[in-house]
Image 1 (cartoon, rainbow, N blue to C red):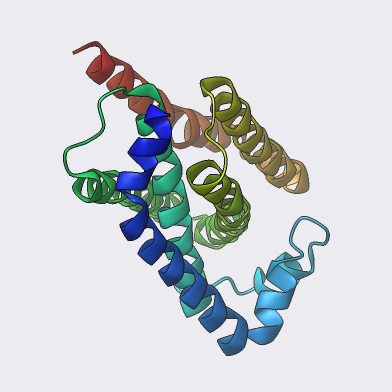
Image 2 (cartoon, rainbow, N blue to C red):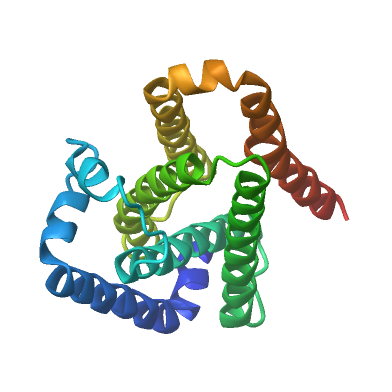
Length: 222
């Protein structure tokens, strides 16, 4: 009952956020009809990646729209995690959400910027652009999948900590499978540049998340 009361306090602004997401989806669908049709079939076919990945434009309006949806979806899930594992509801839930989405967006953009700088330094900009486009596309798609489940947790079904952990585990598994798929498709290139690949993997795929994990666990212990 307490969890339901916590959600009820913040449903108005969450509803407005979800309305914004719906508007963004409508804009994406009707402004980029063919691209949207290929994108929503991403887990069934590679057609979207084959058509758009050759000349990947990471700052295409379509990608920006879906990154915005990605940020809102991820931040809502993190906010839901906070509500579930903290008995005391936040005094200003909207402010807490703004902090979460700002931190998430800053983390993703900072990581992206470092990846681009590293690509320029070692002269693999074209390859990294495709990799970033591939990864961004799948993560945007996963965020779109996350959203209905998060809505279910907020409005319909009070999630248990186990349910949240299982859902988080599934998202992480999907992310891991995506990375494996990218590495498998570029196996030959990776083998010929194994030093740079290991450097990239440790510095930009494992390192940031390890630092983030240590930071979060340290803050929880405060």
